[in-house]
Amino acid sequence: PSHPSIWIARVIGIIAIAIGFVLGIEGLDQPNSLWLPTALVLILTGLFAQAYAFYRTITYKIQPEDKNDL
Image 1 (cartoon, rainbow, N blue to C red):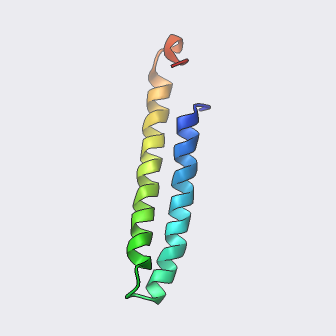
Image 2 (image 1 turned 60 degrees about the vertical axis):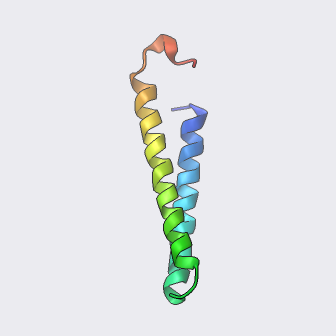
């Protein structure tokens, strides 16, 4: 889909999940630091962004053709 909100959510989701995993690896090396909780929040943010993009994709696909320009 070419709707901007879908692509923005997907890109933010991918970037947040990737950074979350990198910070999570660092957080596992230093268990008493703030890296691990930050990584978990970033991974959850990325998952929520991907879920929102999926929801918008489904609603974009099932709406009538004359309302696609909204």
